[in-house]
Length: 108
Length: 119
Image (cartoon, rainbow over all chains, first blue to last red; front, side):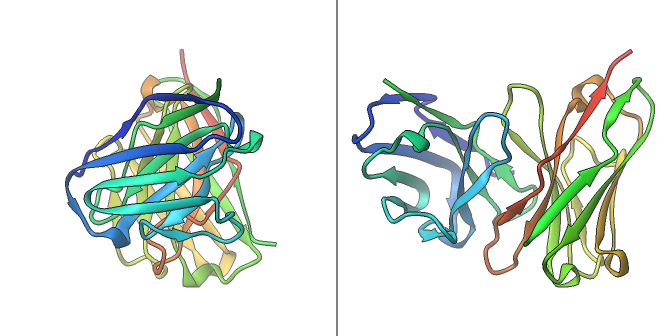
C-alpha cells in the first residue's frame, strides 16, 4: 500500500495569496497515477488534477499540479474565496487506491 | 447531464446487512470502470472497491474484504455495494464514483448516501 502524507495539515492564507500544498508518497509513484481533489463542507469531492499536472474539465489555470517520484505539489497561484476548502491527493498506481489525509485551506 | 445517484443508505444495527445502489445516467455506463469511496464523519476519504467496465476484475480495501461485494448491471446502468456484517466503524457517507481509465482518477462523484451502524 502506498501511503500518502499531506502537509501542512492546515494552511491559513488570505485571498490573493499563493497556496502550496504538498503530497509525499511512501514510495515512488508514476506521475500518471497522482490526482488532487477539492472538497467543500457538505459536498462531494471534485477532481482538480489528474496525472499529476493535468487540469480536469472546468478547473481554472490558477490551479496547477506538479511533481514526480515521491513529491507532488498542488499550487493555487491567487486564492479566491471559493478556494477555501479541504484538498486531498490520491494515488492509483496499484491497489489499494489511497488518499492522503487532507490539507485544510482556511481563510486567515 | 452526467449523474450518479446513490440510494439504500440508512440506520442499521451492528452485524446487519445493507445494499447500496447507484443509478448512472448521462453517459455510457458500460464503458466505465467504477468505484465506491466512503467518508466517515469528520474524516478523510477512503477507497473501498473497484470494478472494471465489464465486471470481470474487482478489488477491495482490506477493511471491507470478505464483508462487502461490489457488482454492476450494465443493462440497468447500475452499480451496487452489498455490505454484510456491518460494524460501527462502517458509519460513513458512501459515494459512487466514475473512473475513466485514461484519468486513473474519479471524475464524477455522486452526492453520497449515509450509512449509520449503531445499536
